Length: 462
Image (cartoon, rainbow, N blue to C red; front, side, top):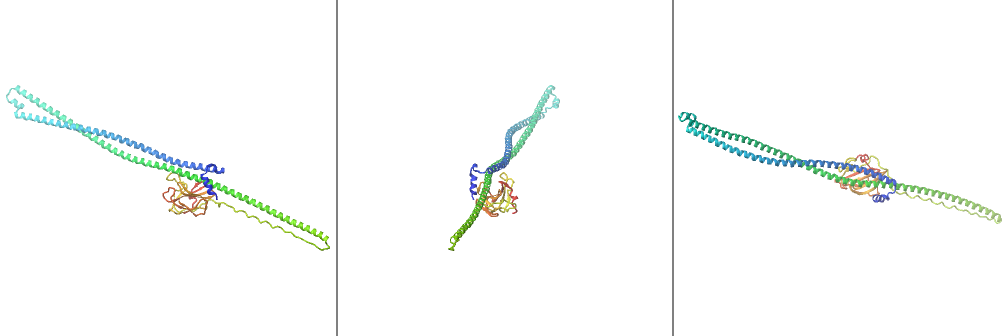
C-alpha cells in the first residue's frame, strides 16, 4: 500500500499537488467550515476578554476614586490638625486670661474687704458721723467720699466678674470647638481606614482580573494553535482518504478491464482453437479422401499386384487457459454502526458540545482511566495516522470506511503504525497524559465526512 506515502505528501506538499478538482473543492469547503467554527470560538473568547477588560476598567475607576478620596481625607485631616492646634492655643489663651481675671477679682475683693474693715475699725459710718457733733459739711464731704469709693470699688468688681463670666463662656465654646474638631478627625480617620480597606480589596480584584486576562489570552493562543493543527490534519486526511478511494476505484476498474480483456482473449483463443481443430479435422478428412482416391487409382493401376496402403493424421492438443492475476489493495470497510464498545473504561468528562475550561467547546469526550491502560479500536479499520501532535500528544486515527474516522489522543504509547489494519477491540495504544495534560486519560472523537459527531450517540454501555 502506498497510503502512508500519499498521506505524507498531502501533509507537506503545496496546494498545486492536488490532482482531483472535486477533492480540492471538498477540502476548501471543509476549510471554510472549520475556519467559521474557529472564528466563532475565538469570538466567544474575545468577548470574555472584553468583559474582563471592562471589569478591569471599572475596578480601576473605583480604585482611582478610593485613592482620590484618601488623598482628600488626608488633606482634611491636615486641616483639622491645624484647626485643632489653633483651637488648643485659643483655649490656652482663654484659660490664661481667666486666671488673670480671677486673680484681679480676688485682688479687688481683698482690697474692698480691707476698706470695709478699716471703716469699721475707725468707726466711720453715716450714723456715727451724724452723732459725732462735728461740722456737718465735713461730715457730708467724708460721707460723699466714702460713697464714691465704695461705688467705684463695686463697679470695678462687677466689671471683673463680667469679664470673668465672658471668658468662662469663651472657654466652654473653645472646649466644644476642640471636641468637635477631635470628633471630625476621628470620623475622618475611620473613613480613611474604610477607604484603605476598599483600596486593598479593589487592588486584589484588579490583580485577579489581570491574572485571568493573562490566562485567557494564553488559552486563546493555545486554542488557535491546537485547532489549526487538528483542522489541518483532518482536512489532509479527508482528502487523502478520498484520493485513496478514487485510487481503489481506478484499480478495480483496471482489474475489471483486465478481466474483460483476458475473457475476450480466452474467447478468441477458444474460437481460434475450435477453428483450428475444425480446420485440422477438415484437412484430415480431405487428406484421407485424397489418399483413398489415390489408393483407388493405384488399385486400378496395380490391381494385378493386389497392393493397397492407408495413412491417418493426428489432432494437435488444445492450449491450456491462463489463470487471472490476484487483485491487490486494502480491505474495504463498511463505516460505523451504533452501540460501539468504549475504547477504554473510565469516567466520562469533557462531554461533546460542552464549554472547555480554556475556551471553545469539546469536539469529543475525555475518558479518565489509569495510566497505561489498553486503548482498543471501536471498530475494524485501517490506521491512517500515528504520531505526536501539539495539544493532543500521541495521536492515532483509524479510517473505518464510508468517510468515518475515530480519533484517539493523549496516549502514552502507540501500538500500531500507519497502514496497519485493526480489528474491533484490538489494542492500538495505551492511556497516558501526553500533549501537556495533567491527569491520565483518553481523548476520543468520531468524525464523519470530516465533521465531529457526538461519540456518546455511537457508543453503547460500559
